[in-house]
Structures are given as structure tokens and as C-alpha cells.
Length: 68
Image 1 (cartoon, rainbow, N blue to C red):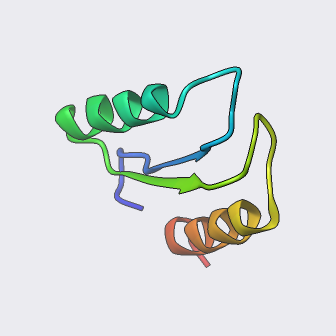
Image 2: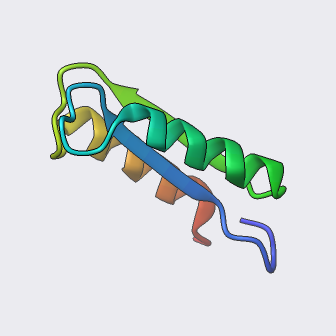
């Protein structure tokens, strides 16, 4: 994590019928255009919920961005 700049983790299920994956993509693109680091992961079969793969990716992201 860089001082004064917060990294973002964007996770989205490709089977989400509430919010489209396109919204996640647009968010990632807007953050990138603003110079904000964002990691986006899409999860096949995941609906408007969470899954084990997402939680594992989030854990790795937090390990990367949080100080020891």
C-alpha cells in the first residue's frame, strides 16, 4: 500500500443477476483512469454472494496491502 493511496479489490460473480459484471468492470476502469490501483477478479458460477475462491483472493490481497 502506498501512503495516501488506497488499493481496491473488486470481486464479482459472473452469475450475479442483481448487479452485472459490467458494473464491476466500469468501476475498475474508472478507478484506473483516476490513477487508483484496483485488482478485479471475476468468479464463474458465483451469484450475488461470495465463494471460497473469492475469500482466498481477498486474503492474498489484504496480505499484500496491509502492513505486517
